[in-house]
Every structure is written in C-alpha cells, then in structure tokens.
Image 1 (cartoon, rainbow, N blue to C red):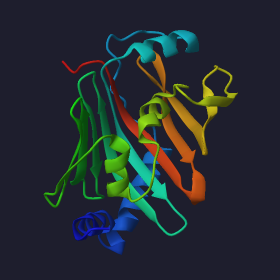
Image 2 (image 1 turned 180 degrees about the horizontal axis):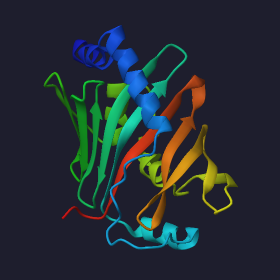
Image 3 (image 1 turned 90 degrees about the horizontal axis):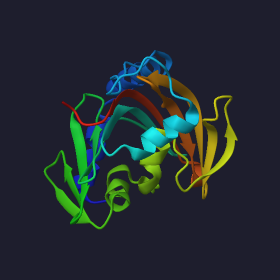
Image 4 (image 1 turned 135 degrees about the horizontal axis):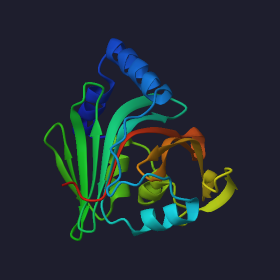
Length: 216
C-alpha cells in the first residue's frame, strides 16, 4: 500500500473514540426507519414485484446513500457512501466517520478516475480497480448497482420472500442477503443488505436515502 493510501486509512480509522461513535451511529441507522426521498412521479400504491422490477430496470438516473461496514478476518471498517448513476456518469463517494469525503470515484466513457482526500489522482479502466485501492479488498463493483437495487442482474436467486423479491442472491463466490426492504414512493427498495464473499469478507449496507429519477 502506498503512503498516500495509508493516509486514507488513517482518515477512515481516526481514533478509537471516533470509531466507537461511528459504530453507535451506524447501529442506530441499521435499526431505525430510513428517511427516504420519495420516488418521482409519486404513486399512492406499492407496485407489484414484476412491475416494480420493470420500472427499476428502466431507470437511467438514481442515487443511493447510507452507511456501510466492510469486515475481514483482520478488521472492520465503517464508512458512509453515496452512489450516483446516470447514462453518462457513475460516481461513488466514500466518507469517513466525520463525514469528510475520503475518496470519490467517477466512471465515464474515458475510464475510471479516483480523487482522494490527500489530493492524489489515479486512473484505471474500471471502478473495481480503483475501489480495491481505496478499501484494500476486492469487491465485485460492477454488480453493486444491481445488488443495491434488488435486481437479479447476472446473479442467480436462491430464495425469494412472499412478495417475490430476493431474500438471497448468489453471484460466483458471493451471496447477497436482503435483510430488510422499505417502501419508497410506489417502489419496494432494499434498506439493509449483507454480501458475504470469499476469505471471510462481508459488506453490510444500510441504505438510508433513495432518489429515483433526475433531481429537479
């Protein structure tokens, strides 16, 4: 790991007191009701799963933000995130427990670009390469949007809930467990999920805000 990326991890870890405080905040986030931005256009009824999947699959613009815990056999990392998706640009911002932007990764036609809190800039062909530099763990970054949206994508379904939404999805060595959904406008969206991967890696995500469609 380069000195610059060591600095990133120092910002993310801070001191023990801040980590404990961040953990308490995250625990409240995971247990409390999420504040969701209503879907536009709004609807007075929740769409059935088939229609819901059709609507979400056709979305070109959406945003999701929340808190995450990345666990390995050696350590846990708490961080905030915001994902922005559009036809022209994909953007992932990662925040430390104080809410500072530790890293921002953007993906466009020319490739992927990383800017860190230390002022370092990196380029790569895809999001996965740059995300592994920041988190120091290999994640299937290309599949994260479908995981967050609760879409099957290239995964296989192991089980569904009573509404036909996935309880567990499998993608290669990864299993994605959907622990909680919440209504967002007329759509049922994931609120809490955990992805368990190889070598004891686990990514737990609490999505606290959704915005579907372009911001006005």
